Length: 417
Ligand code: NAD
Image (cartoon, rainbow, N blue to C red; front, side, top):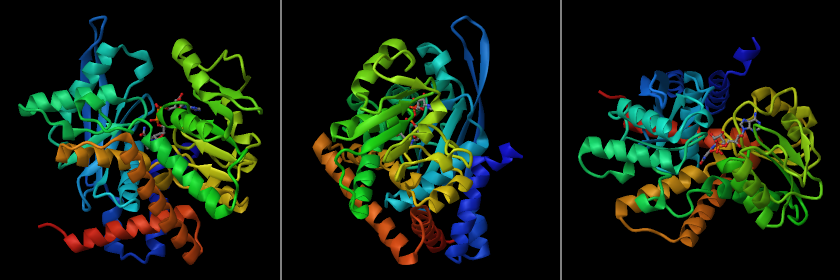
């Protein structure tokens, strides 16, 4: 039963059901919003470097496109499964709605471990996967972006495959692409920067002075690594950083730039000399002010939530907290900045990239970061105001705001034909 209980799709649906009941959404609309619009499952055969044939499984799910084209990342990870991708697609619908972007939600994934594949094999997986979903994606239909296990290079291969099929260059088919191919300044660290803006806003509304606050970050990839570096630059003390290999701890503070250099050389956090090495799960029990889960879903559970000592949890990752854990965090008066808000910076700058590409007019990094800050602060304060006025937590407030807008758009459009 434990596996069922932590099924991210079931959890996402139960949270949606609770939100729709609070919003008094009618049963027919409830049924509509629970279902993904389109679900693709594809086989991705490649010839490996050793000459053998391997078949990978891939998915692309579009949840709701009533507010605009579908938008969402592509994940390469051995644990990818359809329920996970459906849940993440739905979360993208709510995220775009919450921050006011004219997009619906999508997500894709391939069951593959990129750490065990050569660049050549990754390129072949990416190109064949793109070909298999080519009719579903496009700049006005569904625009992929990076997620766990994918990056700007993967986006460049998708762009090229799609463009070759169409017979002309179509840079708008993906975001998070390299700058030299029409990517946006500031996209690389946008999710983390957006997350930091929500942390700073939280400190403001809680009346906490940000000097000398300590932070623990789970995950040292795009989101966790950049969040640690931005917070370090702002003067926060990073007391712990963990990834799949280990948890590094130093109560006097760690230097994430130095750890990044170490990681680049050694491909692991293990063996880094200026820190104590703890089992990776211990990140959740450490004494700190702010905890940033930035790895995968289902990390904060009923087993470890009670041990969390942070005052603020900023969900850099998608769905890192189970509903049972949520209740415990609430009982312990921990302020949770929910995923759909805390990590919306990535899709926001993806939107900027899409706009800049459509206009063929590109902004400076400063312009991008200022516009990002505007959107993140506006979304934070709207959610905070709603949460105070309706006496609900931030996750419920974010969900109510987001779902009500999608329900309204769906109802205004009506049902085709
Ligand atoms: P990434 O692949 O760059 O990094 C993932 C990190 O998590 C790695 O450091 C990995 O070692 C670590 N990790 C994996 N399992 C772990 C475990 N059990 N314990 C500790 N660390 C573990 O991925 P990313 O792009 O940084 O994404 C991280 C999360 O943020 C995901 O939930 C993703 O959906 C979400 N997210 C990413 C973006 C984005 O722009 N990249 C945007 C919004 C949300």
